[in-house]
Length: 94
Figure (tube, rainbow, N blue to C red):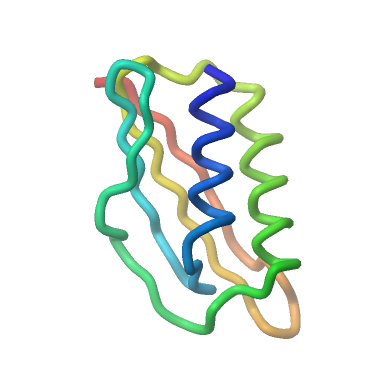
């Protein structure tokens, strides 16, 4: 499901991303879409922080089986001084 990972990374890169967020993505018939974020606040991520997040998501999800129908929940927290301080990726089948 490399296409879903690429689409997820593109959505993260192209959209405003906040430093304290929980984002919810749905996969239906292999196509990815983002729902309304569960939580988003803090400062807007810098391009460098977004690139770090995209790379981390790519690495973590490339080791997992991505469902044709399911959901991905991306939960993370950045700090201005410490970078990524907390993060998790959950993948569920429908």
